[in-house]
Length: 176
Image (cartoon, rainbow, N blue to C red; front, side, top):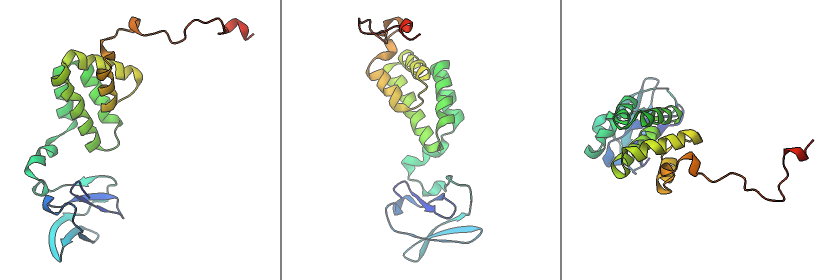
């Protein structure tokens, strides 16, 4: 796979390979306790077998140096960084982490959301997180859209009325 992992289909578990082999065809041999990965009859990786579905087994030595910092990402790290910005941002980041099916997706989403603090400022990010929370949406694109449209700078009184008044609109009295 392009992310540096091979998938053992029987267990639906992912195992890392050295980054120099990304995109190359490898052979996976496995036993009840081990998973071995070969390239041209040369073993390039060996991992203890795990049967935990949709999880990743990573050897830090397999990562390119510029990607090794990704293994240091934890939910606590993102929540702590969010708390330094604003308590509403921390609350929102906690929800993003809880709702994503895969930790890697949640970490990338959180990283992107927190990067808005540098770009637009902590106050706008906190407002955007409140808006997204009210919408019940917990992901990067929602925050990006709120900030792009500057909805975070509106107060609820500035919102347009949901239904405009019109002669053809029947009220609740009509349905009796």
